[in-house]
Image 1 (cartoon, rainbow, N blue to C red):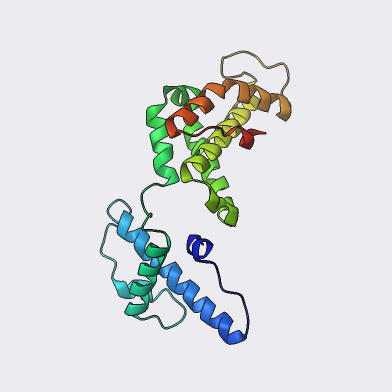
Image 2 (cartoon, rainbow, N blue to C red; image 1 turned 45 degrees about the vertical axis):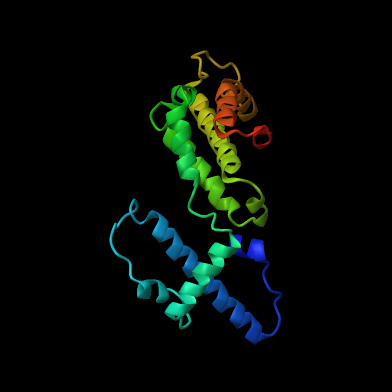
Length: 206
C-alpha cells in the first residue's frame, strides 16, 4: 500500500489490464514480505532459512526469481530505502522502558498488555485507510497508546469503582469514567509526546 501511495496506482481498465495490475500487486506484496523477513528474520520465529522459491510459491500466478528481485528493488527505490527502521512495537517498548509514569499508571496485572492490544487493534484497523501514510509512525503509535491507556483505565475504574489515585468514583457511567481516566493519564500523555518529540496527540482522545 505504501508503494502505490508513493507512485500511484494505475487506473482500472480492460480485463487484461486488471489481471496485469493484480500480478504486479502480488509481486510487490511478496517483495514486501521478503524485505520484511530480511530485516526481522533474526528475531522472529522460526529463526530458520527461508528460500526464494518459498516466496515465489505464495503468488497465485507464475512468479520468476527475476520478478521478485525487480519488485524488491522497485519497492526500495519508491520508498527511498526508508524501510525497517522503526515499528510501532519498537516505539511501545521504548515508551515502557523510558516512562516510569506509564509503568506506574498501567503496571497492574494485564494493564500494559491491554494497552498494547488496544493500540495494535486500532493500528490494524487503520491500515485500510490510505491517509494513514501521511503520518509518521511515532505519531500513530503515540495516539494509539494514549487511546489504549484510556480504554484500559476506563475498564479498570468501572470494575473497581476507584480511580488511579485510589479515590472512590461517585459516577460510573462511561463519560464520567473516561473523564477521570483522561485526568489521571494527562501526565503520561505529555511524557509520551516529549519522548517521541511530537507536539500533540490530544485529538485522539476527543
